[in-house]
Amino acid sequence: MTDAAVLHIKGRVLVGPEEVRDELWVVDGRVTYERPAHAREVATVTGWVLPGLVDAHCHVGLDAHGAVDEATSEKQALADRDAGALLLRDAGSPADTRWVDDREDLPKIIRAGRHIARTRRYIRNYAHEIEPGDLAAYVRREARRGDGWVKLVGDWIDREVGDLTPCWPRWAIDEAIAAAHEEGARVTAHCFSEDSLTDLVEAGIDCVEHATGLTEETIPLFAERGVAIVPTLVNIATFPDLAAGGEAKFPNWAAHMRRLHARRYDTVRAAHDAGIQIFTGTDAGGSLPHGLVADEVAELVAAGIPAVDALAAATWRAREWLGRPRLDEGSPADLVAYEADPRVDVRVLAAPRQVVLRGRVVG
Image 1 (cartoon, rainbow, N blue to C red):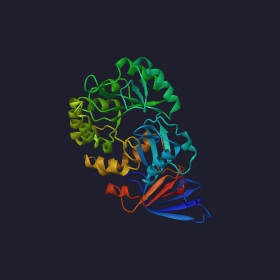
Image 2 (spheres, one colour):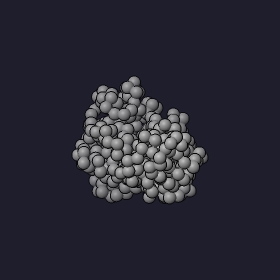
Image 3 (cartoon, rainbow, N blue to C red):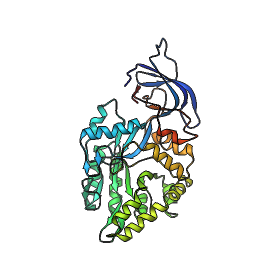
Image 4 (cartoon, one colour):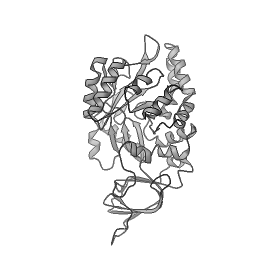
């Protein structure tokens, strides 16, 4: 790690999708566009520069079996950092990762507390597993523990039905989302299926994760209510394998998962065309490794989203949505430099040239 009081960032600084500057300076870890008086240039970073990327759905402190120790959590956060993801929205974790906030060399995490799921309706060791009458109380608890977000499990396989079904009655959702908003938190929910979406949106949810069940009927509702989605396409790519593993016991569920996978690109493209806000998220930390944010941006482009919009979903627009600065005057100097213009070809995101976190070159 290079510890420098002053950095000179030269090349093409993408302050916004159309706003490009030739240079910026980093003084005491913060961005300035005015050359410091009497500054001695300590280090120079060159290239096409973006604000630190955003992974808006990952799970630091979690693996396929539940909570992990601090050493493993550190490796997860470092993998994201080295991939250029310097702002993470942790969409549910049973581990307490607040110690990360004291580490200047690790990405900033916005936490949603621990998942809240229906009893025996989610992955073991991940969530608070409760019944509807307790939902609002648990939402208040996680709203106070998190960083402005709460994560619900909106649907999951119902073993008696043999397919995905909604986890919560409408009255419980109404109470829970109202409670979160009273606590100043936004609410998001894991949703694969079609049937869970309308109640959540009409109850005032702020975001839906995965959103593979969007249809011609619900897409206009999302657009009208301003509900964002985080498609996690690198995770949706695993649906065929999941279906194969569960087909013998739950054939209807397996067929449903394959249908959702087959139309995933059409679903995301239709959401974009309708004006729904879309943000990048990898779902890393469960079965997927960390550090996949570039892959997710590439998947959005593969779905038919214009490159600049896919890039904005991981940078400028995502930071605004999460209430975090871009490369504004006086903001923390979290940025990534690349060899070429990522607006032309997002595949350059897979090979950061240099990563600067809080004004220090870390990769």
